[in-house]
Image 1: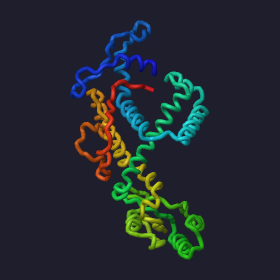
Image 2 (image 1 turned 45 degrees about the vertical axis):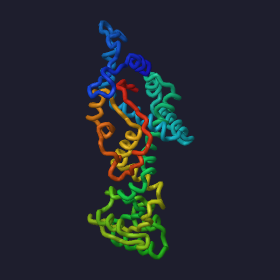
Image 3 (image 1 turned 180 degrees about the horizontal axis):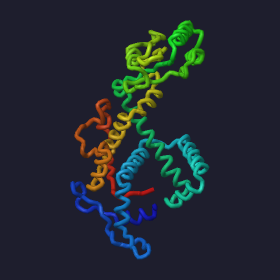
Image 4 (image 1 turned 90 degrees about the vertical axis):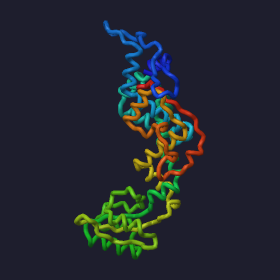
Length: 319
């Protein structure tokens, strides 16, 4: 498949001037026959159209993300090790099916590690780097606090656990285990997007401080009781955990994509590809945006960053 894509790409031209709103990508020799099946001839143009319709938008976006990630995220030994472990898992889990997939894609195992698995990890790290670079403003917006919450189905159990926690005879995990709670007792990050617990408990936690200690609060549902404590409300104290929690918020991930695509001047010239991306996910179309900041809570650091234009072609690599 990679060889086929290369054949198509070799004849790829952009019809009309770059930057024009009606520019279209075409193959210079679209009528050339690539293969014959019985009496049916398959041309470059037919294959290109099929590939474009099935994967143009996703391929353009993924390739752009990988290109940005390659510039922003260093490949670490941990990434290489993780990629090798994933490869081994796929081989043992899917056996000959996976081998056939690699062969049909024109990839060796090494190619798969270096062009698929490692770039995927780099792309995942982009959102964390975005949060790192905008941590103060994102913290102001999402208010991450570190708290420990134990859930109980009995008020007596909740009060007994509260008593042990207040007099220090049990840790949070021990108090939970001693009184029929499945809670781990480990601190967690609570943000304005957290919906795991009752709104009444979340309101108390957001207004509390570590000095307030442990408290018991009935939940809104029958047989639900909470024992909770704010561990810290200074995000810098638990920055790594806060970054991981913020990275799981869809709006933050979306803002991260916009941030990086703006920084690198992502621009789509082909009108068909532009429309395909617009229909699926317009946040990537930076050229259509007039707002200079990547999001309401993000800093303006991207505006001062160097812009290396990354144009997107419509030739889809259907891996």
